Structures are given as C-alpha cells and as structure tokens.
Image 1 (tube, rainbow, N blue to C red):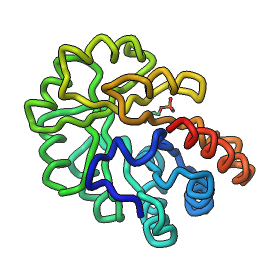
Image 2 (cartoon, rainbow, N blue to C red):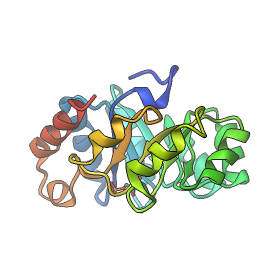
Image 3 (tube, helix red, strand yellow):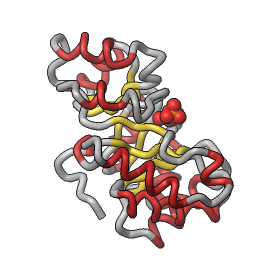
Amino acid sequence: MPSTSESLLSVVPVVPVVVIDDLAHAVPVARALVAGGLPVIELTLRTPVALDAIAAIAAEVPEILVGAGTIVTPGQVKQAADAGAQFLVSPGSTPTLLAAMGDSGLPFLPGTATVSEALAVLEAGHTEMKFFPAEASGGAAYLKSIASPLPAARFCPTGGITAASAPAYLALPNVGCVGGSWLTPADALATGDWDRVRALAAEAAALG
Ligand code: 3PG
C-alpha cells in the first residue's frame, strides 16, 4: 500500500474518482488502476454499493490506497472508516464535518471552493484540501490567483478536469495532485474494458 505519512497530495499525480454501480466492478477497476501505475482509488459514496466496494477493494487489493469520497455527513465518516477506507474526501466543509473527519484519525481532504472556505479549513489546522468543483469555480486561473495570499494551502482540484486540462493544474505551486473520473468512464466499466482503464491510468500516471 502506498504511504500517506508525508502527504495525501503527494502519492499520485491523479487520484481516480470512481462511481461504482455494480459491486462486481470494484476489484477489477482497482486492479486495472494499479496495473496502470495509479495505486490510489477514491470511491464516491453516491451509490448503494459504494461502502461494499470499499470493503471489497480493501480486502482483495491490498496494494491500493482506497478512500471514500462524497462524504457529506459525520455518519458517513464512521461508515467509510468501518468499511476500510484509508482516506476521506468531502465536496465541502462544515465545522461538524471537519471535526468528524479529524476525529477519524484518517488522512482527509475537506472540500473548499472559496478563499473564506480555505481560510476556515486552515484555521481548523488543515493545510491540504480539495478544490471543488474546480472547473466551474474558476479552474487553474483561480488557484493561481490564491497561491500568493494563501501560501499555506495545498489543493487537490477536482470536478470537470480532464487529461487535457490536468497539466495546467499540476504546474501550479499550490497543487499537489488532481482528481477526476475520466480514468474510469461509465461505458468502460459497463463493458468490463479494464484494458482501457489501465491505459487511461498509465497516461495519467505519466503526468507526475
Ligand atoms: C468529485 O467527486 O470529486 C467529482 O465529482 C469528480 O469530478 P469529475 O467527475 O468531473 O471528474
């Protein structure tokens, strides 16, 4: 399993954000990402099988770092941790959610989209955060603008990013990695095209 002791933002250049509808896809997707050189997966808690998918990957693909995304309630923090999630990601931040994620003991990326939200996360003692929805919130130009006033903040932008737009984010001093679902297209999952997932992962891994 990759280590997050240094920084969740330094493990891979692109964190695959994955929506799993069919539990049977979880382990093959994880294996394809590892084979492509991206040993990290963020499973979004947006489908009924998401927690079971996390548990299956944690049990069967020990070489991947498996996390839970779309955490929007403190209850989901516990559910994700119980399922075996090794990191947590939320689309936004509230004081309650920040406290619950902090109490979990797991590394986490709280979501922010404004300077005030980033300041609130910094005030709570966390320097690493998600920037979401990245493209709709101003994209790489926005993050470049806030690098100077917020030098302590480091971001994982996610939301609308593609293989084509990722390099502009990764070139910024306040960006450690980006996240995106483009590596695991729904049609590739539906048809079991794990070779395509592996190839997309390899292309993304080369951005690092
Ligand atoms: C997320 O949860 O981080 C985003 O929904 C992923 O965004 P994308 O699907 O636009 O890559």
